[in-house]
Structures are given as C-alpha cells and as structure tokens.
Image 1 (spheres, chains in turn yellow, green):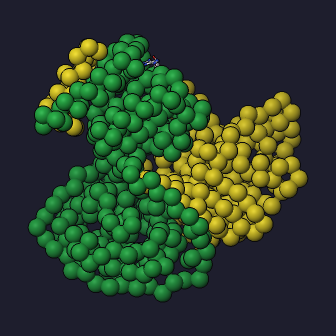
Image 2 (cartoon, each protein chain N blue to C red):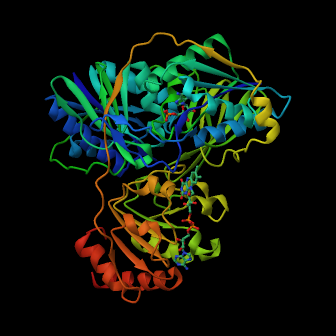
Image 3 (cartoon, rainbow over the protein chains, first blue to last red):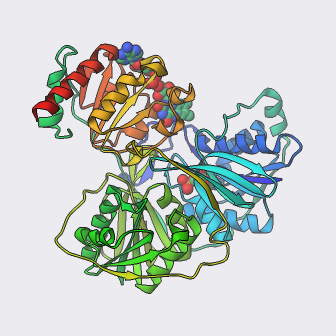
Length: 245
Length: 325
Ligand SMILES: Cc1cc2nc3c(=O)[nH]c(=O)nc-3n(C[C@H](O)[C@H](O)[C@H](O)COP(=O)(O)OP(=O)(O)OC[C@H]3O[C@@H](n4cnc5c(N)ncnc54)[C@H](O)[C@@H]3O)c2cc1C
Ligand SMILES: Nc1ncnc2c1ncn2[C@@H]1O[C@H](COP(=O)(O)O)[C@@H](O)[C@H]1O
C-alpha cells in the first residue's frame, strides 16, 4: 500500500501570536515551527498501517526551504521518503492544487491529512484534494482501518458518531483517537538524514483568496472573584450581569 | 446574482446553527440588494421547510430523497453546486459544522470560488473588495481574508452570529439533481446519536472538567450541573488522553474549538493550548483551588476553592434559582 501524508509546518502550540507592519504580517520572530500536531497523528497511523514491509509512507509539504527541519522530523518518525513542493503555501486552494497534481503523477492508495492546520484552522485541504481528484473524503475522522481495497472510518457528527466504509483511494483528515503520536528514536533521526527528500517546483495556478490583515481578540476585564462560601452570588451575577443563565 | 444558503438538518429538524446561517446569509443578501435562496437536502417536512422564511429565506429548494436522508459528502456538494448554478448564486453560505467542513472546500473547487472558512462576522464590502473576518491560530487571533474570486463560499462559525427573526414566509420548490458516478462511493454503516445530550460545538453553555477532578468517578457532579443548565460537557486534553472522558469532549488547540455563551472550567489550569480552543467563549467562569492558576487571567468570574466543595454548592444554588424563577 502506498500512503501519502500531507504535512504542514506551523507555529509551536505555546507560541504567543503577535503581528507586525500595522497588523498585516504574522511576526515569526523567535517563533519555533513544528510539524502540525494533527499531521503527526496521520503520520503515526500511516506508519502503523504499513508496518515496516506492508507499504510505503511518503510525506508531502508545500513550503519553502525553511520547512525542511519539519520534513526531516517526519522522516525521523518513520516516513519512507519526502517531497517538498517548493512554494510558499498561499492558501488552501493553492496547496491542494499542488498536491493533487503530484498525486495525479504518482498514484497513492490512501491520502491522509490532519483535520486542520493549527495556524489558519481551515479544514479545507483534504476535501479540496479529493474534489480535484474526484474521490471521496472525510474531513475529520476519529478512527481508520484498511481492509483490502476499502477503508472503514469513524467520523464525528454533532452529538454522535458515524461509521462509513469507503473504497480506496480516498482522502481523510485525522483527529485525536486515530493513533498515538510517535516520537523519533536515535535510529530514526540518523536514518532521516539519508532518506530521499525530493524538491519539485510548483505548477502555476490562479489564487482566490488573500490574507490581508489580522486582529487580536479584545482583552477581557479583570476577573471578578466570588467567595467559595457564597456561590449564590455567582449564580446571581451570571443571571443579572452576564445574562447567560 | 443571489445568495444561496445550505440549511443543514438533523433527523429532519433544523438546528439553531441553521437559523444562524440563514439569518447571516439574509444580512449578506441585504448588503447586496439581492434575494436569499435556501437549499435543503434530506427528508424534511413542508412545515419545517417553511420556517426558514422566518429567518429571511425567500425561497427554499427542497431536495427530498430517501437516499439522501443522511449526509453524503460528495452527493450533497454536487447538489449545492447545481443549486448555486440554477439560482445564479455568487455567494454560498453554510455552517462550519462537521459536514460543512466537508462541503465548503468541494464547493470552492466546483464553483472556482474562494472559501472563507470559520467566518465570525459579516463581510465588509467596500471599493469592490470583499473582506471577511475568520478565526485563526486556534482562537488566539483573527485573520482578515479578502476573497478575490467572482464566486464566494462562506462557512460561519457556530454561535458567532445571532439568529434574527422576520415575519416573512418562504415558498418551497422541489429540486432534484441527477446523481453523478462516484457521488455515493462512501457508504454509511452505522450512526450512533446520543440524542439526550447537547452537542458540544452547538452548545450555548459548556461545563468542562480537568485533571483537578482526580478521576472519571468524579464526573457525576459535573454531569448533574450540565443537565441542570442544559449544557454540553467538555474536558481538557489530559483527561481524554487518560480515558476518563471520550476524545469527542476534548477542547483546545488540538481538540474542538468552541465559542459558547458560557464556559465553566472546573479544575483546569488554563494552559495556552487549552485556552486556544475556548477563549472565544463569551463568558468564562473558572473554579480552581489554586489562586495562581493562569486560567483566572482570562476569566470573567472565578471561585478560588476546592471543586468538590464548590460544585455541589453551585448545583444547590442553581436549583434554588430555578425554583424561584
Ligand atoms: C502539542 C500540544 C497540544 C495540546 N493541546 C491541548 C488541547 O487541545 N487541550 C488541552 O486542554 N490541553 C492541550 N495540551 C495540554 C496542555 O498543555 C495542558 O497540559 C493541559 O491543558 C492541562 O490540563 P488540566 O488543566 O486539566 O491539568 P493540570 O494542568 O494538571 O491542571 C489541573 C488544575 O486543577 C486544579 N485543581 C486540582 N485539584 C483541584 C480541586 N480539588 N478543586 C479545584 N481545582 C483543582 C489545579 O490547581 C490545576 O490548576 C496540549 C499540549 C501540547 C504539548
Ligand atoms: N503547506 C502544506 N503542505 C502540505 N500539506 C498541508 C499544507 N497545509 C495544510 N496541509 C494539510 O492539510 C491539512 C489541513 O490543513 P488546512 O486545510 O489548512 O486546515 C493539514 O493538517 C495538512 O495535513
């Protein structure tokens, strides 16, 4: 089985998010970039499904050279090889288009993404790739098994869950529960240095959206503390002042 | 030109988030002096369909079909795209729900449209530009996105826009689209709905527990409080990692992002990754025995105290409040 895992390079989860140039640029100064946490789950499941000799796991990233440490990390965790499509990820459409072109030229049995990237939280790349290839997709899955030529996935729905069977190939966005993330060991880190990381150039594509600025949420006022032995006061505040109950 | 809104139903009934998107789409249609058409898919009664008029839809395209009773991503996307073409809709609005996340990107490809996912406010339309505010960095910031394509897809964050009622009524028209090959490739085997519970992304009130609650056996009081307030349950990541609660309740940067009217955090320290998913809640109440817990810095109301003493007292106080109301 040939699995493709799409990986994105995102600010570390502890990053304090700030902006420069009159709130038009994300301030990357001092920001540590990491493998998107959901993509780590996708990668871990792909490695489990191929389990050594049952197939290969290719990771693909659309990014400039600065993303290579993240790609090497994916190789250290256990991906077979990697591809970097050499372009800044303009938006989800741009990313999905590049990846779909790559898939058309190199067929895969299964394509995994994370449920969303933690920078723009789009949840778009998976379904866009699938639509471009005219194959099924499930944007957010909690479980994934493959049996022969089809997969069984569990997806979350509001107030419950749904189990589906889908013929390969399909695209799925992984969430918590699909697999335990893997931490690279020394052998993995050593071998990652020599695993293939192929760089390919992007294809030309029109763009449909542009991030033109940012806002930071309004700060909350000082917390109002209510004494632990007078909780009736809290209930009154929630009813009369906050008007939420 | 017109605005098309996809109206999601659960078992034939529209949800609050559906009325939110219709109200929101109505406001966008008004910005553009154009009509609002709704499309409904599945098995929804005529009476239920007509209620969409109250929130501003002038016409409802009703795709009624047993095979489409439950959500089928590709087939639904095909239908909505055809409805947009039929109505010459250049703006399509839907909810950023679990199924909405499967539809919006496909519609973006089908209609060659820019997609603004997770919108939190009405678009700003000036000088021929179309700008829209969406959540980014898991709730730590907002991004302003400009859609530069002729067609536009907007998915609205649940709880971000207030339902607005009008006294209009909607006409209902049957609509059908021929199924395309492959549209039904994914087959639903089983649906498990815990109907008695409020769903977390849609909930107005959310009660959340952290590691401070010590173990799964202590969730009884949390559930009782949630039941009293008609609230949904949530938890911090270590709680679901330890299997005390299901992963579906995990909120935060790597869990679900929510924006309820009221979020009550019990025994949760307020780590940055937790806050990322809950900081856009309108009112935050924190109960923690440690006065130095970081969560108090972003809370509106707080109680410094032992959850095992405080929560039962709150339950009693709410019962008294309800009895007197
Ligand atoms: C990549 C990454 C992603 C992450 N994503 C998430 C995420 O999405 N969501 C998330 O929640 N976390 C996430 N985390 C974990 C996060 O960093 C914190 O570790 C976690 O939120 C802490 O959970 P907690 O507050 O329940 O536990 P703790 O930090 O252990 O806090 C327990 C709190 O309970 C209080 N307490 C103890 N006893 C009592 C009592 N009797 N009464 C009242 N209060 C009491 C304590 O004072 C303490 O403040 C992530 C971490 C990483 C590295
Ligand atoms: N630049 C990128 N290169 C490769 N994959 C990406 C990129 N951006 C996003 N993805 C994949 O798409 C998923 C969803 O991202 P998004 O739609 O941006 O929220 C991520 O979890 C990744 O798996």
